[in-house]
Length: 462
Length: 135
Image (tube, rainbow over all chains, first blue to last red; front, side, top):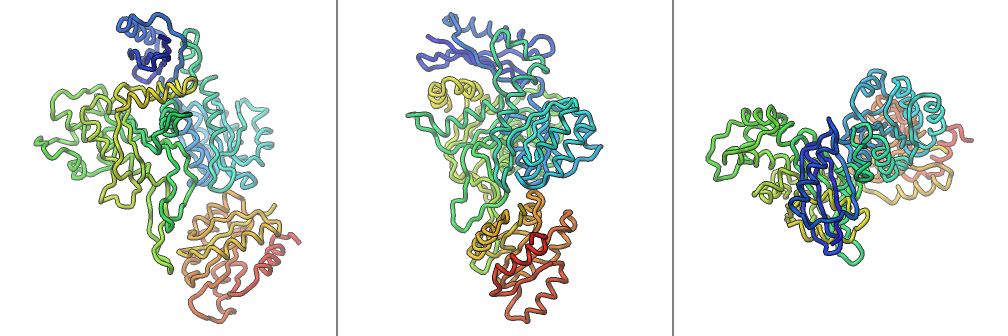
């Protein structure tokens, strides 16, 4: 046995997954509440104790990798010029790096916006704007505004490179800590977020986890290498692409419904599948992540009725559900008591309906859609976003789905719908559940042992 | 280098002329941002903002250009692009109409230069160099 430990300092739980690298199986998992307020190692030690008492056969740990989304995760602000272009590119860089995008600014920032940004609790700012050789004036203006507001968080500059000399002159004499990377949109509609993502991860490792009180853990377990959502995205990418002679699963979707947000990851190009379809808008990232802040089981439950009507809500109940649910009251109960655990069958059914809505609406927002244009040469179509009609696998992860006996039923909501005909949703994918909750752990493991990671994913997703 | 945005407006899918314009302008030393066929006014404007374009060259070959180009200049002004030169060319109106009238109509709509069917791209380039003080 060669035991390797993967640690996820989550917002609620610190989760441990122990893998045997030699025999390629998961020895065991354990979790304990995350203890950021006191000493993050307390929670870790407790979880480790559970792990060892359940699996006394673990004698020695050969290595540890860790990720974290504790203390609110990684919160970022994205700044760009045009909403649909560099602002969107900046947002995608943040999301792809596993961050939550808390603030978004387009065009010239005002004093008021800069002040608001300074007062918000974000960890990193991504400053974009202009293609290379394009508009330089706006990003320079915004850099000045950040200095004037005396911003104290690191700023990653990822915009028009023509502006970089001036921006350095602006930032250098100030207190602003800044990093220059490649433009997130070097040419019109071309997305290039890798360097920006890399820099986000680097700052996360070097500074953010320290500021959040998680750094202490590093003395014991070594470096925390990435935010948890990025680990999930890496696992999904590995499973999709395959590794060496391990064949991948092809294009796939990962959905994580949480208490506050619903995360959707897709791996695939999503190009148009027909010749009369023309792609519009910014280029899509191969591995794309979106986070819906208003779709969740508890914290954001109250927001649901602003997204679907009472009547629409009822359509998500099972046909054999005889209970006359009081929708508003039930939603209120969940958002005012976020630790709510359903006890009766009716409560379970209601939770299931919420999960279905989260799944359905998040999918509507994530997938591409088409629009008909009548031309003299016949009907043509614009496609914005990814065409996911050919997706082969949908994977459910996160506490809500993996503990629900009807998880597959909930995830069926991703499918094509007659009332959403213009959305490029999957047609009939196979549904897999991350029963053992290993996606993030496998993303971590893939950094050193990709082959073991993909084999375990294939073995444990069911 | 001077950046120009080119594209085919509206529900028009004529791609060949668009490619030729792209090629000739690039050969003439312009940085060409080609947004392609089936482009909306907003696509042209957003592209011009991000790339700091000096001119927008709108093509239309299917006869509905006049409708597609309505309020284009007003939108440019709204987006802070009133300094950007606005050109249009091709089969821009329905049927055969007296070109001088067509030109006057498009100029009244805020276009700086208007080109009819059969006009050479070289003419537009000469005008462009003049308008952008490149001569």
